[in-house]
Amino acid sequence: MLRIFHAFLFGSVLAAALAGGTAPAEAEFIQTGPSVFQASEDLRAKVVGTSVGVFVLYAAEPIPLQQFSPDSIKLEGSYSAFITYDAKRNMYSDVVVQSLIYPVRGSFALKVGELSVKVDNNASPYLTVVVGSETKNPSIVPFSSTTPFGVYTGAGAVGILEANQAFSHIKDISPYIVTVDGALNLKGNRVSGHVGLAIPQGQNDCLISGALFIEHHVLEKIKAVKDAAKQREQLQAAVAAAKRSRPFSDIIILSVDSEQHKVIAFDPRDSSVLAIKPVGSGNSDRQICEVEKIRL
Image 1 (spheres, rainbow, N blue to C red):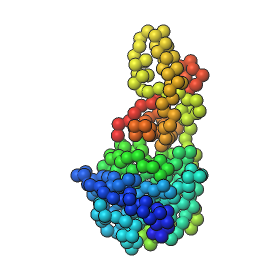
Image 2 (cartoon, helix red, strand yellow):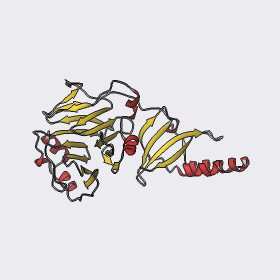
Image 3 (cartoon, rainbow, N blue to C red):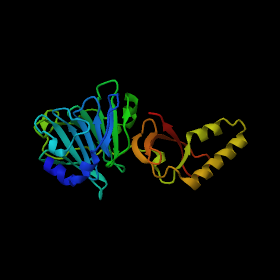
């Protein structure tokens, strides 16, 4: 596993990423270097993002926050997995567990020691790692393909951001378990083939090409106008502005809840998390969608 991990990381790339970092008082994931995260209380938990995948480690022994390299990993008693990303196919392609490589077909959940890893292989590949999932104050690191976008703490944030939202309505789906001897188990049986399940992304009218996005506070002001003619006039102006600017054209889709008709997305412009839902057409020939920033 370490030999494969080294090859993917091209040696010095990871070494540069792992420099520095200080620990805050709270017990949560903290960033100790570019694309490197560690749990501040459970020092065995480490997550490293690279250009070709995400490495997840639950070590046998605590790792000092400022001292870590692949050479220092002790395999005996540790749990680790490297989820590779294929940029050409825009998908997570393999799960590497020590010397074993498992091809990925679809989305899946993975248990790496005390870490919960969930992967969505849709049009926008998305991966999350959660520490403390069984506690009242879990912490999550989300990745869009191989790019992390912050750390969020609290059950509410995890509930919104965690991948595999499509699985929540399907019974009898279990996570793959990384074993301490370097393999994958599923429901107590050793996995010998591929991992994952091809679950299609939920449907939402806001994902249709040409949908118009209008911010929540703008629509609220329009709703507050009592004069119907003025209300229509302001709505038409907001639609025209949305057609011109398209400020949310580069958002990253995180999850789609078909039952609640809601899309959760990430806006890389200001690192905000958005809730998006269809609100009608307003006499326009295109779907109008309300965009609201979520406080996590």
